[in-house]
Amino acid sequence: MVPRLATRLQAVRNLSWPVLLARTLRHAGVRNGWLDRLDFLNAPDATRPRKAVDILFGAMRSAGLNPQRIVERLPGATVLEIGCGRYIGFAPLSAVAGANLYIGADPGLRPELFQNRAVLDRIVDPAIAAAAALIEKGPVDRADMLAKCRLERCGVAEALRPDDAVDVCVSVSCLEHIGDLEASIRRVAAASRPGTVHAHLVNFSNHLSKSSPFAHLYETDPGSFARDWGGIVNGFRHPDMAEMFRSAGLNLRFVPLDRVAPDHMPAEIHSYWTERYEDDVLAVRTGLFFSEGLIRDQGVKS
Image 1 (tube, helix red, strand yellow):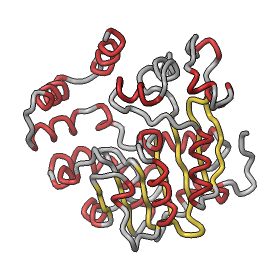
Image 2 (cartoon, helix red, strand yellow; image 1 turned 120 degrees about the vertical axis):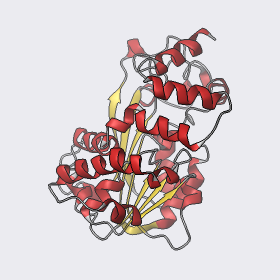
Image 3 (tube, one colour; image 1 turned 135 degrees about the horizontal axis):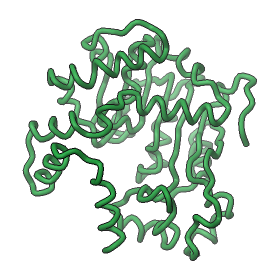
């Protein structure tokens, strides 16, 4: 109880009063569009219109890859973002770069918010401007951008239609949250063209503490952790995901980006983990799965 309370207090420490009000009332069972907009317009990510793009592109640079390889594939493309978040991370960049269609899938997405004038003015327009500045192109009209967006409030397996054919597929700290990940990867693979570019940043930590990234998680088995912490993560490590990609027909490489030092690992690790994984696997906090086509003679970390 004490660790959970401390984690929740830490999570709300930097939230503004409008967000705290909206979330408190929702927790009490009060639900309406006004509260959704209040939270959406005042949450911390509302001021970071390029957050997902900056995080993924930063990870690519850390792996020795050039993000321009993603940008140059966007004109005329169908873009799929798995776990696009409430703020449809790659949608503005996709539109500015000339993509034909952006598919954003996330169970927490509320597409109806993007019909609100305040959201368009305070969220969508700055996001378009930030994307345009990043790739040094002129902005697009927000109505044109949204017309090319298919926003799906569900998981990726449910979001994809039988005739979808994806050219670019990205995700930022999403794969570790998908319960039936293997089925979702198979569905994504089926929608991928032969030359589809993939880039997926995965965070293998407990999502509770940056200073103790594997506390609670490695001290028990994944099922118990999920029950105690509301299914925050699925517990798969990078060899599991690599095998899922391979079995689905996606030939993706993996680069670990951040390994945790031994003194930041739990003192006691449950046998579930030690019987299945080597220490160097358990130490990986973040890593990047990506298509071979993104390399183009660049040096890539191992």
